Length: 194
Image (cartoon, rainbow, N blue to C red; front, side):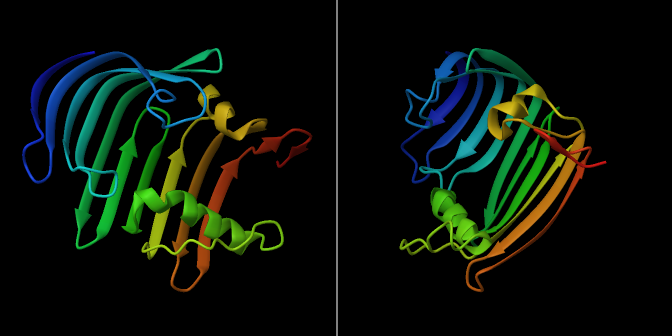
């Protein structure tokens, strides 16, 4: 791993401002995944924070490579921005394969529990209501995909679509979800839509 820049861990909120070239970073080794996911990337990182719930800043990568399940995927022009103002978080991600935007009053460390609450609302017979109390209030996520990419098969299996737009919102206090989804030429195994 190569980097040039500043790393200040003495401040109340540690600061990173570096240009980096990472040749191998295994997410499994870091405890961020259960299977080997090898990342390599070039770019600039400007981040402030000491944990996932308060980190803010920008990541600008000119190239990102993911090696997973004997396949290699290249993503170009990855730009990530994280802000937090009055407990309202805003994360944006732009790249050549998708654009995503997440807003709301939530903690990233509670995402798995938030997903469990949403699953319970969608299918209460299949998913039990989580016992874990959370401080997150709400979030809205928008994802825009112009063209299907082979990398998506790693996460959605046998599904395929030409393009997609999803806007999904969850309000924890009300226990309500809302959203819209538009998939062009959606196909899944033997099921398809014109």
